[in-house]
Image (cartoon, rainbow, N blue to C red):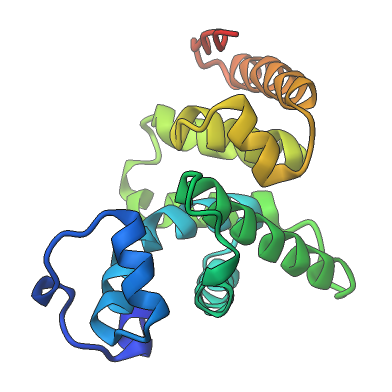
Amino acid sequence: MTLAAEFRFKAAADVPVQSDLELVELCATGNAVAVRAFVERYQSLVFSLCLRMLGHREDAEDTVQEVFVRVFRHLDRWDRARPLRPWLLTIAANRCRTALERRSRLPSQNELAVDLASERRAHSAHQQQEVDLGEELELALAELREEYRTAFVLYFREELSYQEIGEVLGCPQGTVKTWLHRARAQLVERLRERGIVYEISEAQS
């Protein structure tokens, strides 16, 4: 069951396009249609981060639901003077860390690379002779330390600033820059080891 189906609300198309602030204010009043619209607006963003932090689709789907439950429970904690995305992604990152801690206590550990590899290859088994750069990058990302991978995804894919990434991950901007530098270096090295010619441009300060 999808998250949208889980909420079982009226179609979000019935709600006029709202700014984040307007949408949050409507959600805070318990407006079911607004809640559905909020989920549809941010579900892909949150799922993308969860999948890359957890590396397992089912775990990511479960965590996404936890994230939105927590978001709607604590909408009053969002500072309306600041962007919504970093606050939302902070909650998502925290829930992913909790999920990783739970996973670390289970007998089955270190599944990230295996699960992500399976996830990425399942739809293209008939093309295994061809190297897909996007797939190779995903596999290389899966081998990075959690904080390097998350910082990389937030900066290059979600286009958050150093400051916003620091807020999401709870660390200084200098640490974010260090993690990004190491992530780029390790990704380039892993891609070279696989025989892929690929350079990742340096982030601008």
